[in-house]
Image (tube, rainbow, N blue to C red):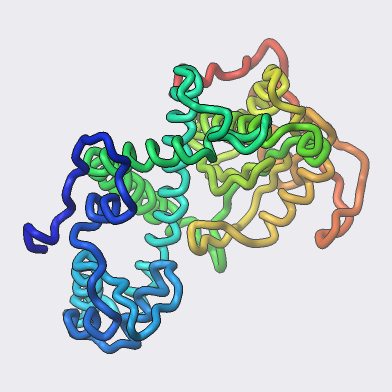
Length: 366
């Protein structure tokens, strides 16, 4: 990329940066190429360039639209070079691009929201938001134009400092993923590797949604995700995904799974902001695909979660048997019940044996 096309830092000034200023700060020279020009520059067909653009998660581009920057051209050249040098075929290269794009999309939205919340808090405390900036008395200041403009400026300014951290975190996570793959290989028998799968969800969340303002609901969900993530990772578990009122986690061993489940219920019960929680866990083979996990074990854990009473942990037979010799925990069979898509089961309730093992202090691991 030429010096003229390189990203250019925002300059301090009285005027708010325009979208073109922000794009130049992040991507370099403004968009000036159409799809034929960028595909010709990368030495690939228009069809291949279009597939790459779609893999990045962006919509169709008309023939005459100058939508592409020199940064787009460089990225397309890098992907096509992988194919030309036989390091990957086109479908594999596009799959890798799609994986990065989906992850980066969520990351970018998440970070933008965090910065906007920080800016809104600062501007509200300083009395810098006027009534006319907000749409109604209950309006969220995060969505106001002054906050959006200042958040955009900060994000563009921070990008160069965040980029090395992004690469470091990716390499760290890649190392962990490789190590998990090497560890899993000897365990794999047929399809899937044995894991403990758990779900934790907030009880009566629909009723909570109806009575809370959007700002308070967002704070509740954020608090739940933060608390759950801290507890799960402190015990060596992995957060697979979070969906509002529910978090899904995975562990290779039963002891950390039991500690996670009970610590989650107890910590959420102790938190005045959060409603009660319930947890369901199952042990068995799981299939890893696209960063997610699938299989009957996952379905069983999900159904057990829905069947568990508030502030309780239900486990399946396989996990109950594995926990039987583990010090500090006990399981008590609950009544038989029929789980949709699973059949008739007898879940067991997981308990901590008092006086043997106390709840883990998560802060000691964070």
